[in-house]
Length: 249
Length: 249
Image 1: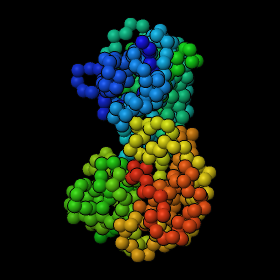
Image 2: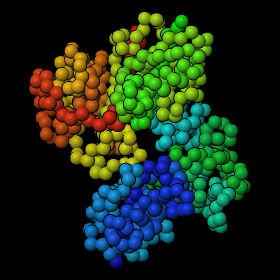
Image 3: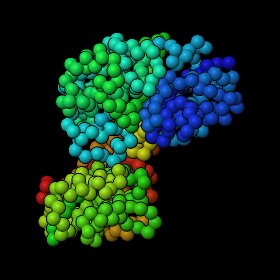
Image 4: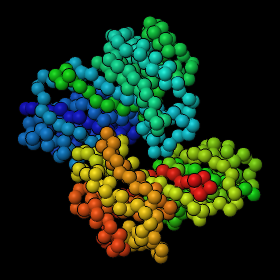
């Protein structure tokens, strides 16, 4: 029996997120089905980031156990033959039987993309959040800096979440404007709460239009109240970029 | 009566190209319908670039005549309300009654995007041509340089085309590799033949993998035979970037 780690890229547009659920098709389900057919065993992957409906990925991680004789590095090519074109496994390798994609220490990077111009661009509509009002990147950068470090992020966690410990550490949070009118928010952290990156994006947008002062982020963190932060920015702007695990860091 | 010029961006994925035709919906048709409903007149646009099925646009141009009292610059906002999200008019303005989007001198810019890496990226599948084999950009640049100038591009014109004069002028043709593994071919010209940019892209790819020497482009041009050039690269890699007209140059 060996444990295989997959790095999975997907276009989340047509899926109800990562995790198997009663209504609608999910990434996890499609992977389980394709792997089970390929390997002739009942396969059940365990994912690292359980992304929401409409969220994209360049480097989410999933593991599963198998008795296959297919060389681990070749597995991704055979698997991609059986996957739809909106899910592509970027690599496969064998890992230790102790490796768990959520329990092992990891640093996850997410990117939230805003298209900040007067009119939308049709080819980007599913991969960016179009926002008409001019955003002040300097202000957003100041606010982003206040999020870095170990804080109680209860204000930045969906009220629906049942998790008790809402302390998380953000390792970096940067905001940049590109010449193509993108505003890119990049957040790296050792664990995130439900909707955390999208609430951060929604709050930084309020700072960018002047509805919040950058330093008010500090107050919002202290209040530990979801209502004090900004709205949850739409799913299509978010991409799971990649995950580095303890042993790789 | 005034003549209005529109700059039209679209995601060509779900359309049978620009021009009205019996089978399947086209960009022109959707514009005609939305404009006719908005203005309460029978509107028939004339397009500059009659892009193929699956080809995208950031800046195609269309004109039409109208008696409307809506200020020309405001027209695009009212029109976008009636357009699907994969077509967005970027600007509207009044032009002279002599202006014709195809007959007036113009310089058109197209971009052909190749994703050149080992595995495809799902979110880019409709907006790039995924090509697995490593492309040598230096060679492609040398070949591209041979295309610049006034030449008979018969070898780079679809055999289906009925056009008699196949002499065209390419003003610039550049190839670059980005850090995200894109290879971007940018072609600017005063007029193009049917499939010309896609055949240029298909031929530059053959140069990039070593199947053709860069200087063989000169021979291919001289042979005036479609069979001598490379294949027509797929539509989804092509984007009509923009058009500058004589008076604006």
